[in-house]
Length: 102
Image 1 (cartoon, helix red, strand yellow):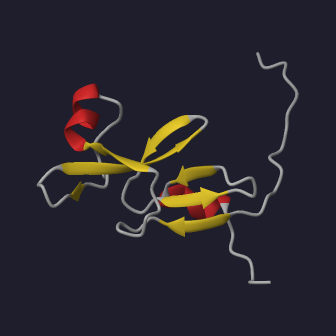
Image 2: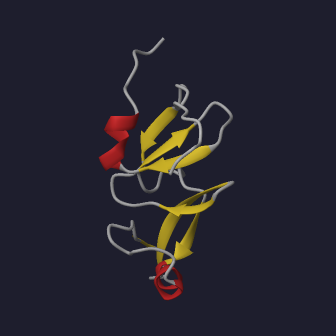
């Protein structure tokens, strides 16, 4: 039984860009073997980048909620306070609508 009050999410303007490797959009990288060994998340559709030394790394975004590893098609969403989040391409179109450049 839910006795809590209902709330509607407040609209806010954000900057969002679909992740592209080699553009410096991520906050860092973690070795793929570490991600898999630690069992942090499912490896399905994780972006894997092979470095010159042959190591394979996964890019991530870090915010106050922790680390989010990027998957194919993910968008990086930057709010007005510069807090960054990751939104999957499957949900992006239902949560965000484009606006005309002002």
